[in-house]
Length: 38
Image (cartoon, rainbow, N blue to C red; front, side, top):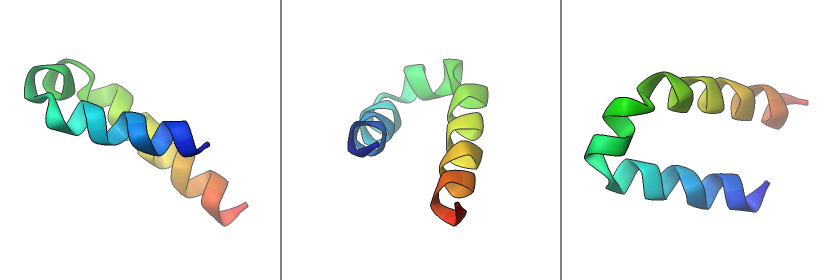
């Protein structure tokens, strides 16, 4: 799970990647919120 957080930061640093995987990042955030609540 720790890797996921690091990966997010990496994607955020990369603007082009974030733009391309904008939907992926949103899904990841929702999944993280669900996981944190669980």
